[in-house]
Length: 489
Image (tube, rainbow, N blue to C red):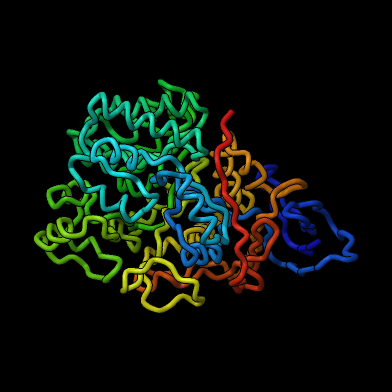
């Protein structure tokens, strides 16, 4: 048995905090209270620290040990790739189990890969890089024929039956498709009792000719089908129009629709350079220039339209960072804060893998080998959110912070994934996925120049009752991560 002694214990499910001990045994929390008996137990003094359920990241494309180590030091205990997903999920889960994972993991059914199979004859291999390369293909982006639509809907349903955590929909990469297709995806989610996780298509402010405003599409589908629908990274798809979008989502929820939303605290996103919305003729819609785009692998800041076109033609799946808000501008910074402060907004990272100059995307070395590049949100999303929203502004209490980082995201999938029901809260019977935070030092350290610098202030991290971080240092031989899969009746 392990006892965390004397910490400030937070249970976001009940909204309570107390100075207490937490006892852990066999992967579960077995007692919470003052002065628990310690005979035969390992006791760790956490006086002055905050103890809460580990963070559940609904939107992480990190399928690597290197990336998960950065996320562990950011307080994350479960990484779920739900916006894009992977296909086939049996391969995705088997590969993760064979490689070993220090954090829990899970995947949605990939709408993009299913469409690629139906449109392009591709055989998905649960490979994120291959999926990114496919996104720029115009034949993938078009509206499906009735035969193609039936084919990819069957694929998605079979993936849900195999345990996929809902359906990941990269609608923003095929934004000219018939909106009827999205309604059918929502109907499938409703029928199976799962959910959709959507990168929305263009909003009307960016493209007045869009078939439907991307955020309106989610609220309409939720109302018409009754499906649970999750709006991914509202800050990056709404940008300077986030107030209008948040008001729309608030109205939808007030009317009874099951719409959830996530945000991250950065003014730049990350995607494949071949994405629809990075076409040279599309940049002006968001006030972007080629120089707003930097290539992750090389650090190159794109200097011209011609160079952008060349990169999109030769390596459309190459990962880039796209600056869409100026984090140093008070008005833009306020928009980021507004997205995080929105009632029930969930913190999610949209983390990407680390990439080294030789093209590799994983390493078991720790500290990580030099030269790795990624978006700083991979290492810093949760610590940055806590620093800004709890420590600096007081916009969130600690219970509220854990509600948004742990409890609410776990609840998004708990209705159809039994393995998630013990996560995101802290009480007797909860899973022993716990984070211990030093409130005086918690902060992100990663920057756009040095994006793999780990966060500080996470003193301990337990996954399934096993230390992954102890006394601020990684336990490099710990791989207790387990799969989180849907359990459909």
